[in-house]
Image (cartoon, rainbow, N blue to C red; front, side):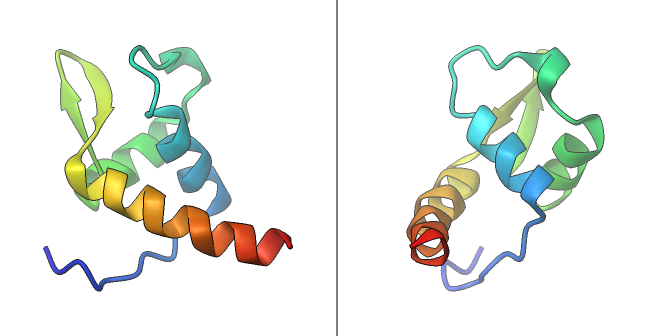
Length: 73
C-alpha cells in the first residue's frame, strides 16, 4: 500500500478506527457497517471474530489525527 494515499473517512469510520486502538474494543458499540468498510480498505481486519486495527490503519489514524487537530483549531 502506498503510504501517501489519503483516506477520506466518514466521521463514523474515524470513530470506529479510533475505537479499535483499544486492546479489547467494545464490539457492541462499533458500527458493523463502518467495521466492514474499514476491513474493505485494509485498515482493519477480523481476527477470531473480532475487529482489529491493521498496520495500515494505525498509519492512517496517526496521520489523520494531525489533520483532525488542524480542523478543530
